[in-house]
Length: 307
Ligand SMILES: [Zn+2]
Image (cartoon, rainbow, N blue to C red; front, side):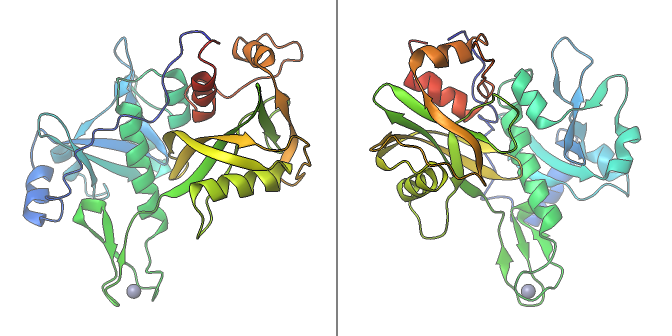
């Protein structure tokens, strides 16, 4: 397997100021600190500085943004190594002309991760910001009583002023499994995938399930294959809108496929030689795998280090 970029959307800075962000005075100071920065999204695309040799997030100053009445309240993303606060805000699509310039473009997250063109940690930072902004956009009202809720703790909570119920950002767990039998792995082509494009099976974890149970249920529902042992391999945040992909290696105890045609257009077993041609884009029928920034590709790389 050729040298490849790493898994996308990882390495977001870990200091989310959890002990400080509920302190309104501290948040206000950070918003007025000229060293504080804002990641600006227009719709679901971030502003990227394209002026230099390498792309980077086009951070704006919070103090400059705050002077513009039309800017929504920014949400705290993290504190960086120099103790500077990094916020994120989302502008409506109509704001595109006021943000885009010769030096600044709006680029979608999937493209940025596929090209692996940002400094280490920046796709992770953008993934975190995009997921939290999306949650605020679509969770404006209390699920208990319908009252409009208020942003708290610099964006890590919403509070209902009527029934006082707290609402927290959600993350949706998905299992994604490399199903193995002897030297072969099972992959499928979803009904919305392009012709010839195969990937690992995946599905949402349902209430009351363990990761192992979700893996066995999803694999059986989609392909009729029975699963025994399940081992954790790796995980990936997937900000479309806020999923955690949990990658596992699942050992099949049966091999006859019975396809769920509502979910999959095709599913079949692949041996090492065939996977190798897919990795190098020279499969005789043009079959392909997901790009290197995806967990499906990186799990295959981990399972077959000789590729
Ligand atoms: Zn309420």
